[in-house]
Image 1 (cartoon, helix red, strand yellow):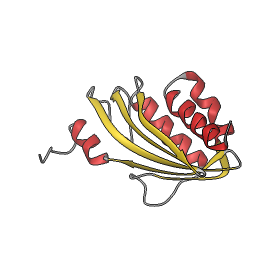
Image 2 (cartoon, helix red, strand yellow):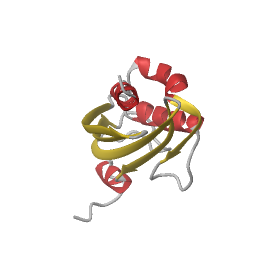
Image 3 (cartoon, helix red, strand yellow):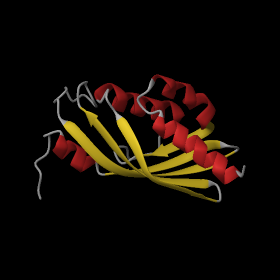
Image 4 (tube, rainbow, N blue to C red):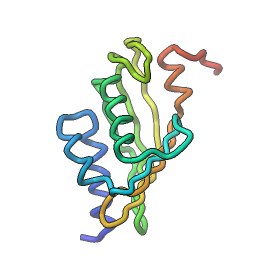
Length: 141
């Protein structure tokens, strides 16, 4: 199996387990010790521990979280994923009390691997749309 295929499988496992009990077991084996995440809600990259906290925040805020992978491909040492995140806001999220509203967000994630682990990840997600779906920001459309 090629390195590209192994990287792609690692990404598929990580994202398909999101919100499930086995997801937390992937962090130590999936993230490189020098991991950085670039995420739209944060001005600077975060390390693996803060990445885990971000994920845990989404999972506790949206306990019925589901991620569907629409497209995934790899080239060289990178994997690109296009997917959809859905969930119901049933728990506190970023100091926002539960609204009971459903969200559905498309996202793109580019993951760079080094030594078989995720060293850097860039996520693009429309966070304003998420706030609109939660009823916190008026929909301008």
